[in-house]
Length: 165
Image 1 (cartoon, rainbow, N blue to C red):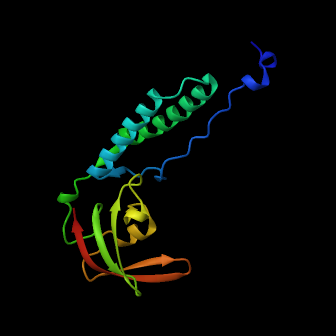
Image 2: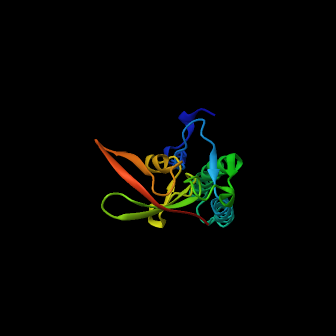
């Protein structure tokens, strides 16, 4: 049937699906074990949400289902590409993926864990391994200094402590 014969209010609006955290082309999707478990929990929650959609308004139900399906598709791609790195096997004297790093930025001590793109949450003091600050810290050892470019300035970050959970 031609779209000309469809009532305007019956036309479906395509939902906008928010993208997942950015992961540069060609970069593996590294995750910690807890990050992988969080992805699986997110999948379960989305599947549960889809099963429990209200049935009163069929159009709204369809739109909600399309939105959830879009989010699930992106999530399943991330789960399929996930490469779990065992943080306990990392060298304890060098900053690597999964490390919790305490460093001095010239003004104060800061502490962050370097995690996967989907796990990053600055409020929980977790930064993605692809973030510029994480890239400047990776490979450094205790008492070494990392140069972190912040705008037009180079900030010196002195590594104070490295630990793996």
